Length: 376
Ligand SMILES: Cc1cc2nc3c(=O)[nH]c(=O)nc-3n(C[C@H](O)[C@H](O)[C@H](O)COP(=O)(O)OP(=O)(O)OC[C@H]3O[C@@H](n4cnc5c(N)ncnc54)[C@H](O)[C@@H]3O)c2cc1C
Image 1 (tube, rainbow, N blue to C red):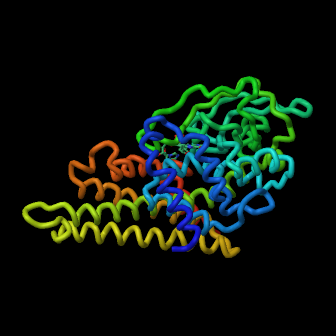
Image 2: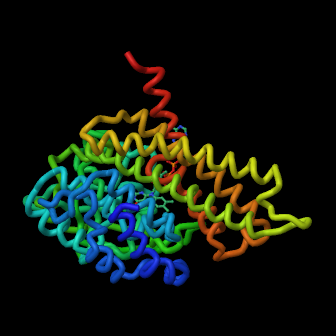
Image 3: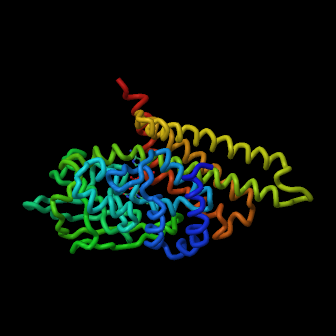
């Protein structure tokens, strides 16, 4: 096991696994966990040293994600503790030193929590139609609107927010990104959303009423928000594919152990052919999905390009594998797999978001179909 994996495993075993059931019940991860993860350098893995990160590539951040789940963590924990993975990349790429000092460095140091707010109550898949407005008024923007399903929205200190700076009907060209501090007057967390899974990850509905935001908080050029969001979807979707595969890997390990220990009709489950073949299938779909997802992470990490079609294939393949595996894991655990707080039951619930968040399975299929059918 390499050094990074060992560090992550130790952190998970000491600082995460014993407390995760409490955080699931509380509906959030305590802030001090961010500070502890940052102290070990885990929040900065995959981020350039120039912005306060520890260096490394997407392969390294995939390693952190995978090992946290394999060691007994959860994808909900990843969503909560690593929300900066979706909140910061646009700010880093835009390269404004002021925004990097105010938001990126303190977040990677575990002092601030960031969120990304794109989805609105009217719709999430159709990003180009978002309706939250930011009207320019001299050196400020006045923001009005609402967002929903925002990961870490209840705890966030700032929200990288997709807003419409153009006139209504300007489509994707009228979308910009603004960093909004959550202590601004007019910003409210209107609701904490209760969910099927990801219980330790707070998810919120946000409201903006005449929120006054300095124009220097604009990320990149006005009107480029949609393009920035799309560009960074690649790493988010690959990361979700890695998470889905890791959940599947963990469920396979738990199921193998269970089937060796559990005896029915005088022999262990692991000796019954139908059980053995089911586990073989779980391993087959997971191995293929993982190999594909990690090959994209590897290519990006070595300076190569990946296409939106490849990313969509990786996400959908991983989600399908994970769905199949978590279902089989619960089935092979019998009644024990249905009990609240059994680990496979938690993965079963957590897994359901993977085909919805970060672009749904149907939207991924649209991307794949477009690449196949509408190519020149
Ligand atoms: C736990 C959780 C955390 C989340 N975290 C965040 C976050 O941090 N930030 C953020 O901005 N958003 C977040 N989201 C929102 C998430 O990205 C959206 O839920 C997702 O993009 C889908 O949008 P929607 O829910 O509005 O569904 P819709 O867009 O209304 O889609 C509903 C259904 O219709 C299908 N559909 C839509 N359009 C088409 C089409 N053209 N063809 C075929 N089928 C279609 C979809 O695939 C889906 O099955 C989160 C959601 C959840 C549940």
